[in-house]
Length: 314
Length: 253
Ligand SMILES: Nc1ncnc2c1ncn2[C@@H]1O[C@H](COP(=O)(O)OP(=O)(O)OP(=O)(O)O)[C@@H](O)[C@H]1O
Ligand SMILES: [Mg+2]
Image 1 (cartoon, rainbow over the protein chains, first blue to last red):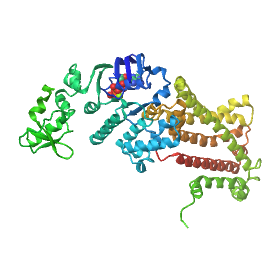
Image 2: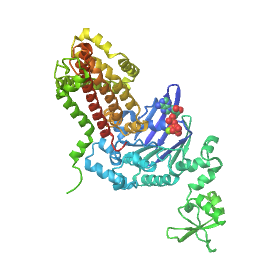
Image 3: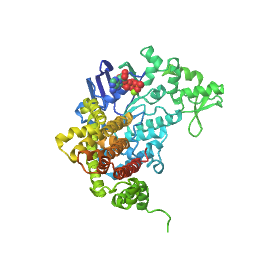
Image 4: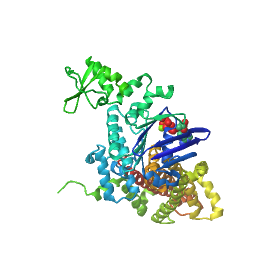
């Protein structure tokens, strides 16, 4: 659990972070969003003390971070950044094994862990272990960066635009991996991103910052439905907010049991989003869809009316 | 039977250029007398055409010793100072050190010699001090450039992963800056091999002695002998450094 109480950071005359309070529960993924320069990275770096806060308190599992030994604190917090920061003179395997080695794990355990992580992040050992960072594509390098952050199995992970500058397909697969990781390994993650779709898709808690302050925080749905002001509304997509909400609501939440009526030809998978269902309707010019499972068996149906208005009876 | 070169031979092959220069240098230093006819032709009027006041091998050895001691001190001091002023605690001294190092280079070595002799007396020490001062700039400048030029993301990651200051310096900063630092040392040493000849003017006997004596006595053959040996020594050391720099170029670069 990470708690920030009235945390402030000044750089000279400029206040980069201005009295923010935030609580990230264990196992929660918290996304920080906001326009450039609003203090997201500064907030993140104060948690692992790359930057020392000037005011307020930051607690990790109830203990002030200042009480921890700086090095020890960082070794138990995973850290991944957009530029990856991989060491160019070390191989992929050596880069990933950095923190375990700093923690003086025996060599065999480090090696086993590196192999495990490379498999987890889809980096075949034979192909990548001995490569140097400059021999990797941007996406591969970011995977290695994430693997390195996860290496010592930290329960807290700080990620500063870890998937920035990636093509949408690689990005989505890394997002899926991260969601999967978090679900399986129950990590507490603080995640900075400029990609609102990414934030909405990944976050349990969405924190909107502006000029060093938190403007609003809550679940993605609550923010989409009830933005505190025009700034939050426009940051979340303005008039696109409806579609963004549709994008994070699965079809299974709105589908209805099969009716005796004839099953429509147009179909959508039950784990698809409402946005995708809408797209299928639009493309197929249908106002009813069959909802199918993995075996392509119909498990329910979804009407346009239900899709649009289903929230009323929630 | 394989046609592959055994690793030892392969390694030797890569050191070919410095080895060629080294053998030429040793050959000439040991057998300058064989070239007596050539030097008679260069300096037909002279009775003595081979520098007589000292074995060339000994002069070469002394030359090398002076340059080595001065360079070693310059590396220790230069790299040490540059490392210190790039640490948080020493930041304030960065401009001072950079300025001092560049002053060392603008100050003519002859002037340093002239100033050092009254303090240190005649002999080898004044020239070592002069070379040390003269050789500092390229080392300090390159070490500063190498350490300051590290990618910000790499340094942030090194801190963020929980590496201590000394771990960062030894495992990340110095290895990554090494090629730039080595280039500075290379410049410093090669320049100083030539500059060391000045030591002969204050009584240090090295390869500069034949040159100075040749100038004083109007004997071009002496000058030539000193100059050729210094040139060969510089080539030998320079090509060895080049080899070293390439060996340092890890595949990650
Ligand atoms: N080391 C520093 N020294 C001085 N000012 C800084 C420093 N780091 C950040 N700032 C300032 O603090 C403010 C917040 O910076 P921060 O990096 O936290 O923004 P950000 O929200 O991460 O922005 P971006 O989305 O562009 O990464 C900025 O105005 C920035 O100029
Ligand atoms: Mg940032």
